[in-house]
Image (cartoon, rainbow, N blue to C red; front, top):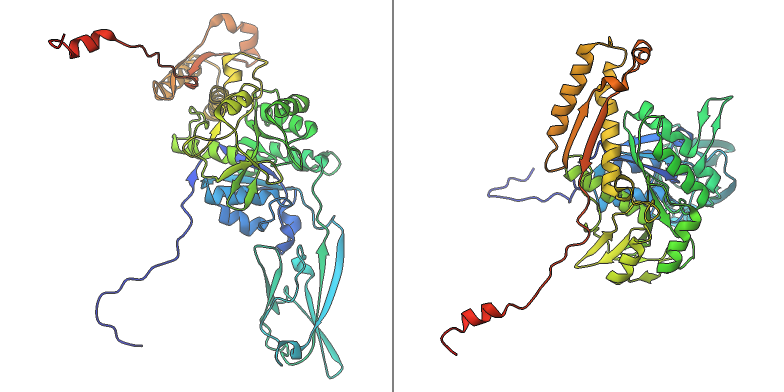
Length: 494
């Protein structure tokens, strides 16, 4: 080793930012991932997969930058580069075992590589090649041997475009003799609404698609607070399924469905976007419709992905309490566009008109921002807790938190100790959030709500009032000219 003398500095490659933890704003993303690049793709198909970073998601589900085919990769990219936040639950509905496949084969000749087959083979240009299907065969002196990755003969990796690279490991594979390379390539088509909505098979006890949302908490231990199916949510059927799940998760929890308005080649306007929202039935207080997609350099990303990640990220920065709207927060994108990538630029008045239809969008005001604080229920409802996104989400958050906080008291003796314990601890807990996160909250036990019959049946009722703040959507300043100020300034000159 060479001897050095002096002071030296060495630089490491830049690592991804450490993701913020958003335990109260967990995203559940339903869509497709390139699971054909995994050793066991069926193990991550129609199963909730909890990931604590985008890197972990890429390792568990695969990653390519074909965002149109593989919608889960959009979420991985955004949550790695724009809004580093975790954890996130991914539900992949692309099944390798149930998809059509086409076999491929080629002979690798040493002469094609200058006399020696390299240890790193990039000959396959096909995408969506199933990793476990790749085989090598070689015949030497009339003896044919088969080599597989499972036996450790070679390792397979994939480029970001999705083409496989084979790294030879087994030294018994001759580099100077022809190799026959074979594989099976998947025919990947866009998932249908039925794939996303999913189903439950009573005979097997297995769920698929959105039906797996009810399994997120039991399996992963997190509440699915933000639900989305990028691109694919722009249908009446999928939207209805996600809104229904968001309103009642496991029969007790509540969340928000972030829905795309527009997909495919459709070029909606301010007016037709509102019509699309109405025809899709995106009118639940438990949904947040988003119109327009976003560009990040050359990548086109669904609006729901960016909006959902922004919600979780800014919640995490606010102590995990969703009292602030994600509207008017910088997104880090480079523009807005239609789903096919055609650029769209809205004026503030146009963006506000979109908001007035109960749809959020993107607006460039000294940087690209999310614009809109109404839920999908607006303008059909003017109930404060249902029309404003941060208020609705505060109600959701508080309901979920109350359930988890007092779950351990279920089946305790129903007596004065229990009543006083809940009332006292809840009032103390809620007071900690005032006046910053809400104006206040108060819980009480009223004998008039609790008959002896109900108490003997094991049922107890409390009443609680909470007051989250509404967003300051309009700030007006009325200006006038004050001649007295001029008179004072010019005193002595007249």
